[in-house]
Image (cartoon, rainbow, N blue to C red):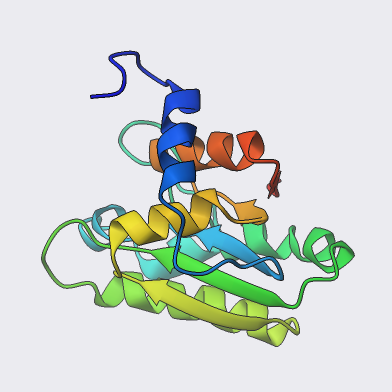
Length: 163
């Protein structure tokens, strides 16, 4: 154990720096999508998740609507970046059709706006974490996991893009 402190980002950064991801994405904006249980185990319809800010049980807006990403498009274009990588995963077993539909809608939205958009869904979580933390450009979702990644991207000199 390297630390017993909560939110010891510098120790976490030291660990991340020793374990680099398999590839870097200097020409890509990495977007974390909060999918899985918050979408699949919730009675909120997909159309509502895509069309409006939805607050979940803890008062957190984990899942961002299409409008959130629309509001980022001009900023992303300003960085002259044409590639987007969407990353998300499931940490529980079950039916993930609703999450996958959400991902496909977000992907299609970016493609319709001129971006080459790829996905990395339910891959190795440690590698996903490393990729996101080492991204040059990062867009967080809602929740604590994205907040941690956001802090590490900043510490590493990356750019966090959000509205």
